[in-house]
Image (cartoon, rainbow, N blue to C red; front, side, top):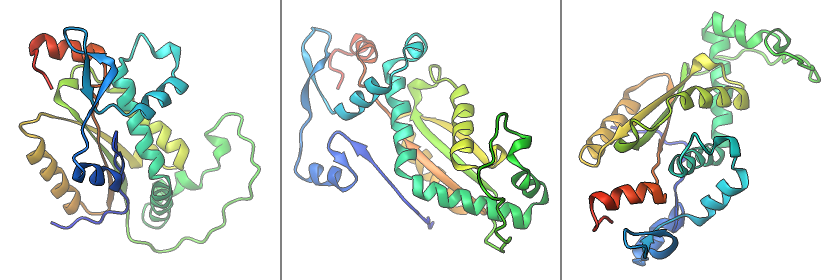
Amino acid sequence: FELHIYSAHSWHSFGKNTEIIDSIKAFKSPELDQKLMNSYGLPILSYRIQDLDDLIDSTLDEDDLPVMSMREKRIHSLIRQQFEQHAETLAMVSNHLKQSALFYDSELAYQYKMHPGWTQENFVDDHEEDKTPVQEVPRLNRFTVHILLAENLIHQWNEQSKFELQEALSIQYAILPEQIQIEHHFFSSQTAYSEWTKLLKDAANTANEVKFLISVDSEIDQECLDERFWLNEQYI
């Protein structure tokens, strides 16, 4: 199957993108982590992204502390970081969705053309009306985000986050909410490869849609590790 990839980004303790490959080739090892301990209270080897923890500390909302574990905070931060890295591509997708709606879909076109003052409280119009002529473009109906998570998060992950993400994307990129779909997938180590391949095939065979795939995980959390070591002292 054939995929059209417009942008891609990876982040690891080795660095970003090609830096990761270079470190793997150099057989870079994990380091002793002074913040994470095994069941005997000794430092363990880890691939913790320290820059990510610094980012969480600088943006931490105290009101979230009782609700979300550190593991979830790290994963949400990684998801936000991915969208930030693809801001330029998302802006182009947003514009294409709008142009497609104006040309092909009268109902969506009406919503796009409707003055923001009708839908937003306290709106102040400091821009001239958009008079860009409607042009024929390849049809694009929807922007779908697939978030791939570990299976052991299935009972812990807050499904409400998909609606919060949908709203955030809608506001930031001026996309109608009904054109954004968020899907969560919980993969086990036994089925991850086959499920991932199936997801890519579906993406390749889906017409009039742009898909954004995020595979993210983190066990860099003492509470999570304590549970793992309780089940298996030799856990890696």
